[in-house]
Length: 182
Image (cartoon, rainbow, N blue to C red; front, side):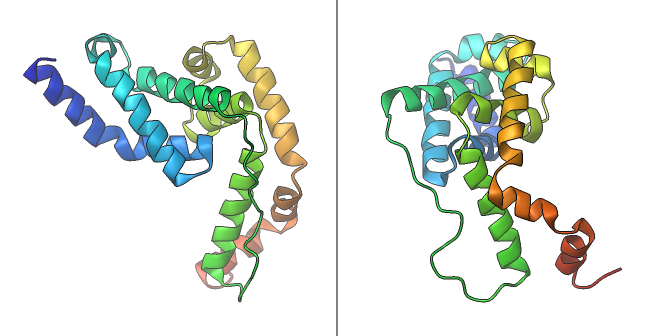
């Protein structure tokens, strides 16, 4: 790789690393897997950086590599992970614990989705991509994106932890986080 392309790639990695790791975290549910997945995707992008950098949207190209690497991870390893909804011992409940519980509940619910549905939900609602962009990233039709999103959202709606959070009045959750009602 030429020095100019090397510098472009390094700048791309510096600018996009944390965002790619966050996306990978939502895909994997584990920070260590997310970092490994991001490194693998960037290594593949590095090998073909000339092609990646010439594309109209290098972010989308690398995001597609990230999703593909995550799918490969499932093909190679058929061991399922058992994520728990809550830690075994619960001390007191304060604002930080409440946020952490909601986050862990959401991550557990995402972990219960099949890989393609999880990828659609992450790309569509976390990355805020259009259905067409998600379809392009995943290499499928927009109709597949719609059906996978519909199935995933239906499954998420039935998740007991998410139903419990949704049943709480939003105003009380928000005001308790802000330190009082307004």
